[in-house]
Amino acid sequence: MSESLFADASKRLEKALKYASVSEDAIERLKYPKTSLSVSIPVRMDNGSLRIFQGYRVRYDDTRGPGKGGVRYHPNVCMDEVQSLAFWMTFKCAVLNLPFGGAKGGVTVNPKELSRLELERLSRGYIDAIADFIGPDVDIPAPDVYTNPMIMGWYMDQYSIIRRQLSPAVVTGKPLAIGGSLGRDTATAAGAFYAIEALMPKFEQPPEATTVAVQGFGNAGAHLAQMLSKAGYKVVAVSDSQGGVYAKKGLDIPSIRRFKDSHKGIQAIYCEDTVCNVIEHEVITNEELLGLDVDILIPAALENQITEANVNSIKAKYIFEVANGPTTSGADKILEEKGVYVFPDILVNAGGVTVSYFEWVQNRSGFYWTLDEVNHRLKVKMVEETQQIWKIAQELSISMRTAAYVHALNRLGEALSAKGTRDYYINS
Ligand code: GLU
Image 1: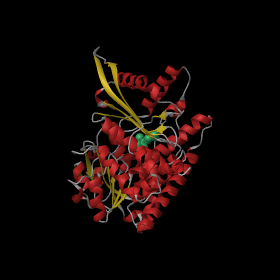
Image 2: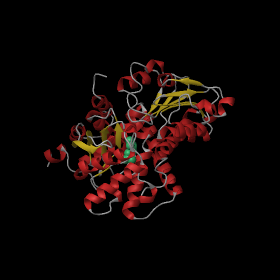
Image 3: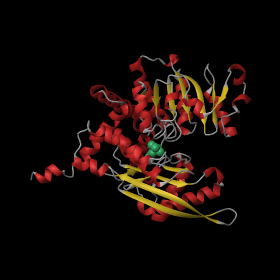
Image 4: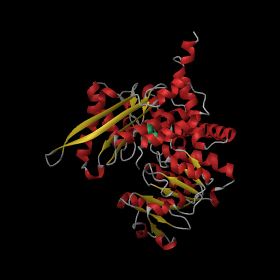
């Protein structure tokens, strides 16, 4: 794509501005990231050589609270991507009314090529490099693509060593035994599931009559596929970065998860289990998955998957964005014209950061909740904000994406204006 990811992301903001009650000053402020940090991380490799990795952390806005957002390990990580992800986090936290601003981090690396010890040294090195930039009241990292609870544990440990003080609230998504929250591992999927369950009845689309394709079989995609199939939806296709499988009659998600865990990839391994005998399936590419004739399409992998180049192949009626930024603004426009309902990332995938917020609250109070308490609170929040955004979309006849931005902008605008606006000073 010639245009930067951030320039494309900003178009959503411009579109929402005319519907939101927000001052010109607030708009101006939200066009720019507050602070961006670029670091180099020296890592001693197992063979004795030294490699320097590039790392980033962007705090986009912290008007409503400390920066919040995950850290991504991926070969394509760059400042433009991290800044865009931090921008989305700002709006996501406002959509869910969490007392956080938006931030994001990343390291340009293919973690699959590192040994476990190299991964640990890189992770601790990343925290050494950004330690002055983060903190429980400043900016709180979490997992994202290809980072996991153990890495978050290393982050907490390294930060605590630097500060000489145990600081569990500096990072969320930690292992349970060292301050993690019950329900954080399934939170992104659970949040998306609650949004789907709140929205689909509006279209009189019962689960049994609903086919679903899920692109991406990481933490969010795999758990969500399983939750949907357990609730009676017919999940006919799933994929990972290597490719996917399709079965008209529906897939057996638990067995795919078992395979993926033991064999590392979905493609061509599905057939090794007995489900193959009862379910005929085809091996498909990621591109083919996006164009399947299903009711619900769930992009749950990376950004820029549905673009102007492939949008015309989309046949799904409803798209729930579990990945961050899977649809470009150009594709969005075409989907809207085609009458496809796109439920945006900043609402649909907000379950993860919501339970991160719960984890942070538990760390700070030292009082830990049951799984039922976590899930109940998550459901209440997801359903409430989903209904409010639906109402805005209906009242203003705008897309759910624009409505979600309007909803977030109203909250961000109020917070930014609480410190004084142009009108306040000029008319004094
Ligand atoms: N990386 C997740 C996201 O994009 C979670 C962020 C968090 O928990 O802070 O929403």
